[in-house]
Image (cartoon, rainbow, N blue to C red; front, side, top):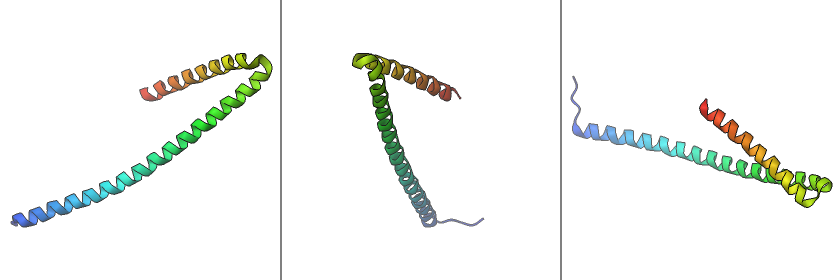
Length: 94
């Protein structure tokens, strides 16, 4: 059995910590970029959704007036949010 001195043990531990720290830094960097891309894409999705709702409101407004179009749009948004909530609970159960 070979003897390991205290200094060799400390050097090994320091090298291990350094390697783990570098791997953690790279992983954190990748995660930060991924979160930034998800944030930007979510913001663009929200903007697109709001513009599509506005377009639907303008189309419906020609048929039922301004107040009616707000009611129709509210009902549509309520149904969509209910469907998204149901899909989210279904995915969470998997």
